[in-house]
Picture 1 (spheres, rainbow, N blue to C red):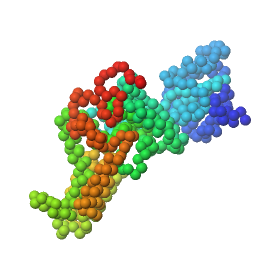
Picture 2 (picture 1 turned 90 degrees about the vertical axis):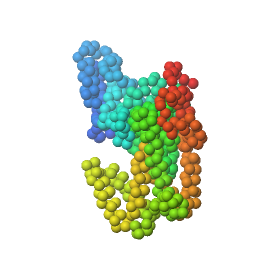
Picture 3 (picture 1 turned 30 degrees about the vertical axis):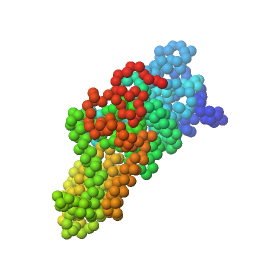
Picture 4 (picture 1 turned 180 degrees about the vertical axis):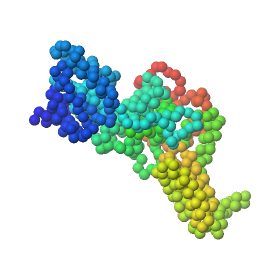
Length: 500
C-alpha cells in the first residue's frame, strides 16, 4: 500500500527499499539487463546507486564508489550526517539534487547515475554520461577545399561544445527541452540573446513544447515536420547543416539553431530559398573566386530546373529556334522511343543510380558507376532506346542537381523540372509559360515561420540582392540580414547586452 501511495505521489521515499520496488515496477530494474543497482552501506546507512550500462562512464562510477566507501574508514563518528558526507565526497562537477521519482526515472534513462541514501527524501543525480558515438569528422555532403574538418556528431553535448568553441559570447544561449513520451529525446535551441528575434524564439519554443508523440527516432526531420507543417510542399522550409562554422555564422546573423540528440545535422531557422544555394566554400576563398564559384553553382541549379524542358520545347517547336541553333534536336532516325519517355526514363535511371550509390558499399560504387555509364548508357544509345542528345541534356541537368548544395532543394527542383516538362508535353509553348508562372507563384506563396521564401527578391531588398549575387568581402558587410529581424542590426562589438 505504501508503495502505491509513493507511486501516485511520485516522491522519493526515505525507505530505499520502497524506491527500489518502484523502479522495478516502473522501468524494470532486475528485468532489463542494462539497468543495475549497486547496494552499499555508509555510516550504517543503506545507499543504493542506480545506473544504466552503455550510457555511463564506468571509470567515473568506480572512482565515485571508492570515495563513498572510504567514508566508513575515515569517518569515526557514526553520528555524522551520511547525506552531507556523501555529497562532499562526490568528486564530480555536475551533481544535482532530485526530489521526485519522475525526474529520477528520466535522468536514469538518460545515462545519469542516481544515489539514494536511507532516511532521506531526496537523492543525488550525477552526470557521468558517456554516449557511444564517433569523433567529429568533416561531413560528406559539405566538404570544402579550405576550412575546418570537424563536423557535428550524434552527441548533442559535443554539438553544443563545437558551437560554443566558435562563439564564446556570454549572450549565447543553449536551452534544452525533452520531446517524446517514450523516447524523451533532448532538443536544444541555440541563439544570441541580444540578436535573435524574441518572437521567433517564442514561436519555436511553443511549437517544440506542443509536440505530443511517443518518440522521434527520425530526430530532426520529425521536429521539422512539427515546426513548419510542410504538408505536400516539396521545397525545404528549413536548412540543414553538419558544419559548426556554418551554424555559428547563421547564429551571428540572428538565426535560431535547433539541435536534436542522435542527429549529426542541425536545423537553421528561418530560411529562404537562397539560403539553400550558398556553400561554405564560397567564403573560404577570395571574394572574386567565391563569386565565380557561386555563379557556376547558380548556373548548375538553373540548368537542373529549366534546361531539359526548354530543350524539349525547342525540339517540339523548331520554328522558335534561330538559324544559328537549328542543329538542336535529334533526328527521328536516331531513336525508336518517344522523346518524352526517353527523358522520363533517363531521369528515373539517374535517381536509381543515386540511390544505388548510397546503398552500395564504397569499394563497389566505382564499379557500379562504370557499368552504368559505359555499358548501360552506350548500349541504350546503340540499340536506339535513347538519343545521344537526350542523354547529354539529362546528364547536364543531373550534374546541376548534384552541384546544388542542399540535397532537399535538388530533389524538389527535380520535381519542378518534371512538372514543367509535362506542361510542355501537354500544352506546348502555352504550357511552358503557364507552368513557369504557376511555379513562381507557388514559390511566392511559401512562408517559413512567417518568412517570405523568395526574399530578398519578393519583397525586394537591394542590399540583400547584391549580397546574394556577389560574394561581398566580410569587412564590407557590416549589417545582419533583415529577414531575421535582428535586435542588433549591425555586426559590431557591443558589450552591453540588450535584454528588453
